[in-house]
Each structure stands twice: as structure tokens, then as C-alpha cells.
Amino acid sequence: MNFDTVIQSGTVVTAADTVVADVGIKGGRIVALGTDLPPTGAKVVNAEGKYVFPGAIDVHTHLDMPFGGTTTADDFESGTTAAACGGTTSIVDFAIQYRGDELRKGLDTWHGKADGKAAIDYAFHMICTDLPIARLRDMDKLVDSGVTSFKLFMAYPGVFMVDDATIFRAMLQTKENGGMICMHCENGGVIDVLVQRALAKGETAPKYHALTRPMTAEAEATRRAIALAEMAGVPLYVVHLSAGDAMEEIRKARQRGVPAFAETCPQYLFLSYEDYERPGFEGAKYVMSPPLRPRGNEQRLWEGLANNALQVVSTDHCSFCMKVHGKGSMGKELGRNDFSKIPNGAPGIETRVHLLYDGGVRPGRLTLNRFVDVIATTPAKLFGLYPRKGTVAVGSDADLVIFDPKKRHVISAESHHMRVDYNPYEGREITGRVEQVFLRGEQIVTDARFTGKAGHGTFLKRAPSGQAALGLTAG
Ligand code: URP
Ligand code: ZN
Ligand code: ZN
Image (cartoon, rainbow, N blue to C red):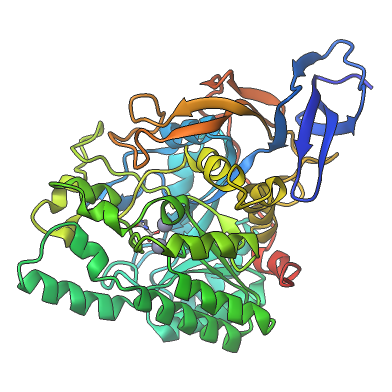
């Protein structure tokens, strides 16, 4: 067989295996895996001594999102360019249905933001904020359009938060249409009371964002979300889980056979509450929800990732500049005198794979195969993209990363591709580097430089997420 490209002699890593092999690519797909594939007429890429793993999948991003009185700094062009440089070849971003609008309007708006701009493949979840009974059927239509997961919020009263009855109705509908419920688990009512009390006492600094969002508020909401999902009989995916006690709720649910899943994010593994105590207004860089937790908590999350209490590492990339950014939108400065006005979110779409390899695989917290599992394979399986995405196999899209495990670099806002004026991991030295990235057989990163094109990404119509998830409940 003639190939378009042959990646020779790399160490191919999947969630299950590690083998030295050649990868033959034709027509954007992997068509052969073996030794000594004939390279006649093909572009040949030597990967000896390097890892070849599936393009990573980030199932939690917010690009071009209006939030907190402003708009995120990264749009679909800058965000996906940065993602590619960090080894991510597909994202699942959150489209938003605003109050009074049809779900379809939210989806059309997000297509308008992404189509023709994204440099990597993309799909959408739908954030639902307004679900009267008459609109529930519209969730089914979204599933038919390939948008097969719905995010609901138990926090942000007055913005995104919905009550338990709405959550329960949405869950019952989602059980029928085969989708999945993604839940932001924090008790928004309790947090709101704590925030008002803090402000009344003049406690306005960024650290009060964390001090008014206790870990118990996350654990309680996680427990409640699981109970509601259990009563509805629908799979549940808890997003951006930060606290060890919340993770225990997931573990207990899974032990009794409930299809409950959770992701954590690098910020909860590598940063901590202590970052809020940086001098001046620096702590604002770390204002996100749930907040960073006290040092020591991250150890529980690492263990949970290793033993499958947690299944995914995504980013919750939601970037705001410290100052006004390029498009004139305000940044974190909005909350200089009131922590509750600091736009919630932090950048991370570019750094996830590097951080997780350097801080997870190298010190032995995660095996190489588990690393691939949590950044690519399980996200693909849970969100209806597998086996097209998320693995290195004959028939899968040729979304591949060639990774040099020895190459070092330093994370910095000076060199990153995200359109944001700081990096939460500034100065951190990383061993291991994404060198070449292929998206459907096209090389989009070459020697760690972006060589792809805006608009090359395609919309991914996903299979029903909840049905896919049900096959994954064991363990
Ligand atoms: O602080 C965060 N997480 N911002 C993004 C919105 C969300 O809740 O995911
Ligand atoms: Zn959230
Ligand atoms: Zn988010």
C-alpha cells in the first residue's frame, strides 16, 4: 500500500499498550501499524526515541465566551492554535443557551464563532439555563445534531444556576435521548450568602473568592447531583472537580454501580489556595470556580486519577487578561475592589499535556498509558468520539502527537500562543515536549511551531454520550 505519510520507529502509546511501530497514514486516517512499513513515495517522519500518542482531547473549554461582564480573551482561532501547540487536536467547547432563547439559537451562535476559525476539530456541549417543559424535547433535537451532552449549573445564581426541579427534568429527558448531563457542582445559594457576608465586612481581596466557596459546598452539590442522576437513571459527568471530598462522592457512587464520572483539571493538581495570597492583586489570576484548594488536597486527586475515581483531565480553559485585552474587553481588573466581580476562569488549553507528563508521568504518579487514557481515550469514549478519535488504531483519524520525552522548555506568557497576558504556571520548567502534531494526517505543528491553518478544524457530530458512557462504568 502507498501511504501519504509514514511515522517511523516511534514508541506508540495508547491507553492499553506501548509498542515500537511505524504508523502509516492515508487520506487522513491511520491505515497501517507495523514494523518496516514501506515508505515509498510517502513523507517520512522519524520518531525514533519519541512517543507517538493520540492527539489529546480537551472536553472542557470556553472560547469566545461572554462571562462575568466581559468576554474571554481567546476566540476559536487563538484558542485552538494554542491547543494544537500543546498537543490537543479536538476540543468540546460549551455553547450557551441564554434565558428565553431556544437551544438551537445557542448552537447556531457557537457555530458562528467556531466555523471557519478553528484550527483543530471541535464539538459542542450545550449549557442549558432555561428549560420549561415545552422546551425539553429540543434537547433531543440537539442530540440528533451531534450535541450529545448538556451542562447544568448548581452555582452562579442569576446567571447560569438552575433549580433541582429543572435539573431533574433535564436528567429524565436526557435518559431518554441517550445524552449525558455534565454538572457544575457547587452549592450556589450557600456561596452567595457567604459572598455577601464577606463583602459586608469589607473583605474584597481575591483570596475571599476561595474563602467563600468551601470544599463542603462542592461535596454537597456533588452528592446531590449524584442522587438526582441516580433517581433519574441517567449517567452523570461532574466537571472541574477540585476537592478530595467531592471525589469521594464519585468514588462511592461508582462503587455501588452508578454511572458517575468526573474530570479534574491541571490547576487543581499543580496550584493551590496559597496562590491567592500572592502580593497585590496577583491572586486574581487564579480566580476560578471551584477555587484552588489548600495544599495537600492535590495528592488525593492524583491518587484518584491513578485508581479511576477520576476519569479525565480537561482544562476548563476560560482565559481573561489581567488588563484590557486585544478586543477591548475588560479583564480581571474588573474586580480590583470586589473579588466577586473578578471574571471567573483561567487559561490552560496549551499547557495540559506538558504539565501532566512532567508532573504526572515523570514522578510516577501516572503510567504512560494512564496519561494517554485521561487526556485522550476516556474523553473520546465518554463523549461519543471513539474510536474515530482518542486512540492510535487502524481506521482512526490520523490525529497524532510526536512527543520528545527529554526535551525541556519553560512555560511563559512570553512564548505561549494563548491570547492572554499571563500564564498561571509562569517559569515552570517542563521536561518533555510536543514536537510534531498531525490532524487528520495534516501536520499542524512542526518542531514545536504552529504550521496549521485557522479554519482547518471541522465540526464533530458526536454519538450519544450517555449511551457511550454506560459501557464504561466498571472500575
Ligand atoms: O471559573 C470557571 N470555571 N469559569 C468557567 C465557567 C465554568 O464554571 O466552567
Ligand atoms: Zn463550571
Ligand atoms: Zn468551565
